[in-house]
Length: 376
Image (tube, rainbow, N blue to C red; front, side):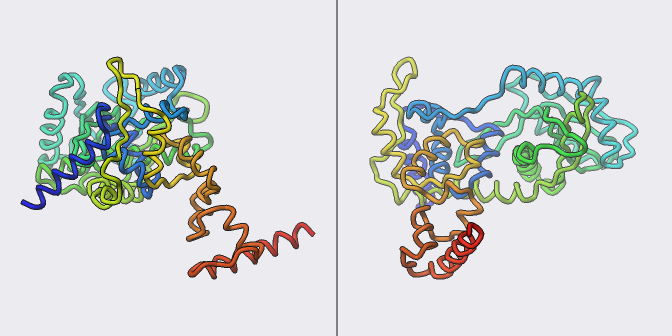
């Protein structure tokens, strides 16, 4: 009973954080971004409460530069249509070559055709039937509707991916329009695609587990399909998303157990934008900014491509000269050194190391000595 009471208090506190602002649903891209910065308490609280981070950032005067151009969206739609044409004939050709599968016969199901309100139930029925079928006939599922629990709420994922099943083994296929040039693609684009595909893998594994099947029937190797070189001819490759899955699970668990983060917040703290009848925020900007600064952010340059609050948190980090500005690798190597000023002081000897900073201070002094020798 006490557990139910804690869960109710937890949900009530998250609703208070969101206030009167409508809850922001999570899509696959937003869930994937959770894995990009799992140590940020501010993001965990805002996502757990369903706060619209984009609306908050715009109201604060720090809008994020996200969103694809109409040209990029059109190009992506054209490429996806090419890959899925004629019942995914081109995709099947690549799957045969990539996975070495002797697929003689393939069934194609477009789940979208049953209507949005039936897609989730229909997806469950089809996946359950496929998991019980021991035959080797392959099956393609287009536009399946999956779900994940995010901080006590159900997020419905509407991917344009295809789940491919053969002999009880499922593969997630992610179709992206960025090019593979001479066998190489933009590492940041591949990393983002891997994080998003990991969300679908986790959602499909969760579905199988709920249906009483082995979740590991869903492969951790996802099929990434991109245009090859400067043509529109698709090429497929396998991407291992085990690392992204591990990070995603940790972050979702962290969001589910937000009690510890909530306990350290003032009772009256809220991120409410207080929208008017037309949905325009009315809360004073300074008041909202002060509320957000009562939570701990973990800014990194990578946030500029994954989080709507990136410019606000970067400005905050600049004001205090945080070592976060130098990137995660440098920040982690600096250990407990919180600011650039502190690091420079330890390096040139004008600042005495605090307890536990002796080793990092020695490394910084050596680096400063080498820098001076190189300049000399």
